Length: 354
Ligand code: PHE
Image (tube, rainbow, N blue to C red):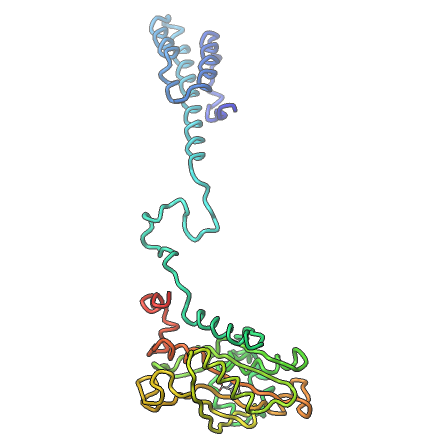
């Protein structure tokens, strides 16, 4: 390897070099290449020797001689600097420009950054997986629901006629372009029905959005688990057995359940489904507000109009659907009192679920 090129010498100032100095210059540059400590060249005996000669040079030759020595010294100095900066940049670890911080800085020098090893999965992500695993074992496909949708999937395809007051039960967020932030995962029913021939067994999990007044029990953003099952000869018994099987597996208990009629335009008949409180066994506790029962979800047999709209013949097939709040399920499992904890990003809360 040759030494770094020597720039920075202003040509116009260059005087014709005295042959003696030119010879020493060549020698010194050669020597510089093999010197381990490059800066030592500036103290080379040859240079000192030249300065000594300067003193005994005649008056009229002295200025040119002196200038030539200085020029040589400057040249060597520039070469040394070149070597030094090359060595310095070779010693640096390359910067990873894709990292969010300079990886050359040691963790101790960046106490303001959170050590990544202390991160944990969000409780809703953990529980979403638990739910997905149970339904996968029961033979369902598990898919994500959409987070932006339209009027047709939110209402039209679900048997809400235009201008029907039931639309007002859902306080939906709507964009200026008329897009809808889905207020329930039932927006996915029509897509699932159109996607394939029965038997259809799908679970859709995802965020839904409601224009709610916020408090410990109400959030504007929550997560729902929608189930859709369609085949020949499906009845309410299948629906109830499915829900009980899932909830028993989730709470690891043998739960009792209770249904009462409820109205949703997209099911007929429709129900509200409650379970015996898994924590107090109907004796009454804080979680069930001393009622012994907990309202959990809406469900029912899919309305023939919804099946037809999804391309499924309601004379041949029947099916059921349910919509269950994931947040509620997890709050009960872990005795979480305030639903707003899920979105708040408070580390004291999140670190409990490591
Ligand atoms: N989508 C309904 C809700 O969120 C719940 C539901 C789903 C009811 C499926 C019946 C069938 O209010």
